[in-house]
Length: 377
Image (cartoon, rainbow, N blue to C red; front, side, top):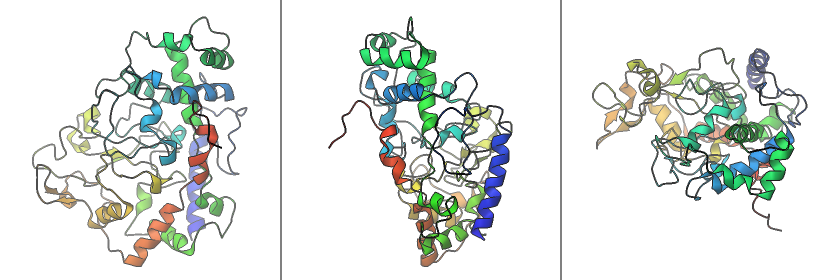
């Protein structure tokens, strides 16, 4: 049963990948399992090993923050599947963000980026947001690009930029964004026990509990697959970019008044100003979910058990305080969030399945690690 469900999902994914307007570059060594297609790559930024290596150096370089305190990796840690341990991001100037940092794993397959912006679809554009954005401040770079002079004087970067783009007369913002985007595209997770079970047909790769958990995941009334379907376990990944991406209100809040979600973070509504979009966010990938706690867009669920409790109740109840309300009654809540009964044994099986999505090889792969630090012996 589970193999048949997975095969159907892969078939739909392959059709979607084939329909993408931006073909992948065959020359780049993706090292993917059979049947796992490479991601789409924009024609104006083809993948190359040199560009990815340059992007890796930039990703871990604290000189890409105005005060030298943070890098991209500060909020996207390899050991946490390129997410972090905070429920709310913390910028280089100490400003607390309304949302947590999303995992960058398999971000190359995402039809839209960030938690709730359907207009953000290109990594080359998105990487500029943490670099220059001030709502909120993340890396806090100045738009006059004076920070590029530091890179120009660095002998390592002189070599890396020349290898990636040819001998440069100057280093540009465009080159930096393309290199960072290339590195982020290279972060593909496809080596979990779950992948060995399905792609390699290794029946011993996951436990019997995980196999039962997969059946529960795809069953009703749980219907986890509704928002977390396909090989990426996200309805916003591996889909045709020409199709609209679904955003979901999961009943996390139900405040009195029109907004019903905290005014500092109303989700998709911030972009569309459509009241029916209040509280709607993208369904993130569940790959490596066991190492990306805390959960939800604001880190309000500390553990996988808390997440299951939330969906079993059909929404979160906050009994007191400024955010009090019964999420089950949230007017914008997605129809699939109905609540369900689950036994302790079933809960354990479901968590075992989610844990089987952890790609330990990715979490320790030197190809994605900090190049500025000498590895310990």
